[in-house]
Image: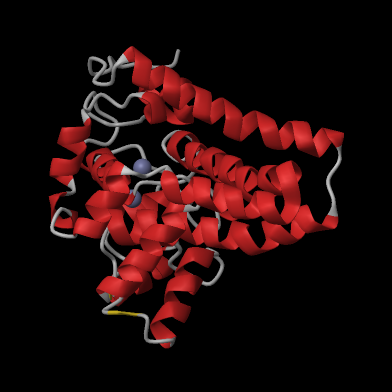
Length: 283
Ligand SMILES: [Zn+2]
Ligand SMILES: [Zn+2]
């Protein structure tokens, strides 16, 4: 029998939750409808340009940089990273607060999402309500408060994504928006949910972390490296989730490229002796 733990009391109003639910439904349903009714080459060209930006916006920007600060960068490039997060309707400040709480309270009642609270907690549920108020999340990400541009983005988090939709509409019409912007957003929402659920339930545990995180190769492939989640929970502030060449971690490759281009620096890596030792012991 699956163990289920209690959830924190709701911290978001019903109206706000309904609004979030509507947005999630729009992002998920419209691309499917357009895929069924027919697409054109312009739609896929938009997708080919925008989807990689959206992926970097989630995996490199919001997760590894804003939540975990695994490298340093300039204030200008920090804002570029934040705008990339916006391309998938992301709010880096809110995400950082929420995700840091996930690591702080993993698989306990205070976690923002855990399979122990049921499937829904991980799959979109935490986007509606994760048990914390907006003020509480911002307080956890208070290091970002000193940047007015980040707080402006926090307040108007939907605006850059909507502007991107306008641009996509002018280039490719409704189907351009659906495939160019919304499809990538829908894929990334499901990829993140997949990590939140499967990588705290199924897979291998290299490290005996206090939580239930796992390394799951299939999820890692489908999420460009995020599925090496037990590695990540052991060393959350390092830029690498995959520790060996066969643990493919495309988000680290992007960080590596950014570092080579001089856009980011002081990239944190897992201790080499640990990597060697885990290799020798075969874990
Ligand atoms: Zn986790
Ligand atoms: Zn993390």
